[in-house]
Image (cartoon, rainbow, N blue to C red; front, side):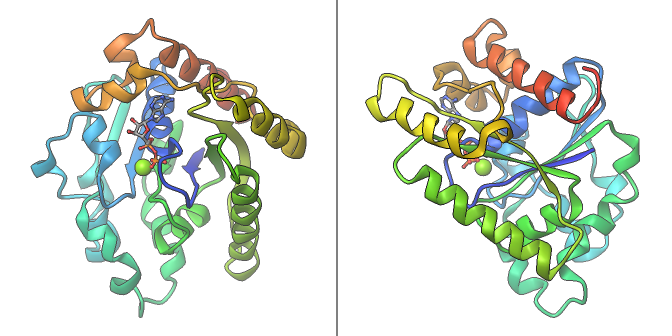
Length: 255
Ligand code: ADP
Ligand code: MG
């Protein structure tokens, strides 16, 4: 099962979800590969990779035909492997402009390893340019993290119509696994209202689990740790564990 984290908006919890969902799935005995498609390498840094050690990365497989097997790294989390991202990914649209089938490169590259893992999780940059499009064509399903702020619903509507255009123009596009509400802060008065609007509009497509704002989730990356390593008893850890159970159920696997 290949799952992509998609939202063209930044700061909505894609990377936090990619890292901690992957760790939660791995903690239940699933083999998981996290692929960092962001040129910032945030998911890789969150898992403790030093900034100077981000290369070689998925960029080498996409741009230079390096064998993907050679890019898979161990992490400090049992059952969780990682392919890093690095700054060269920022150039993907230009670097691949003339490449035939450039929307499906990641799909082809992952072919050799996808069956070796229970889950492959793709962390995307905040855009709907070539790399997230590659993630959509490579993945079976996608998860949309959304933080309940002003215009959140409008953002979602636009995102889904953009995904529909990818589906029509390129084909072989991932299906929605679910929308996850992240960074919810119920001390802010509009939060409840926006969450109700999103839930009212998307119904069962919204995961029951909500990821509330949690200091531990924000702190863990600077220690190169998942929230489970940093503070396994925190509300953030508990929330991502529950989300992983829902993801596994929706993926029709037992966790
Ligand atoms: P994205 O990948 O969508 O840009 P991130 O996962 O990097 O978003 O999150 C943006 C920022 O918010 C990061 O600094 C992250 O540590 C913080 N963050 C994400 N989720 C939470 C949360 N539930 N509670 C507190 N901080 C969070
Ligand atoms: Mg990110």
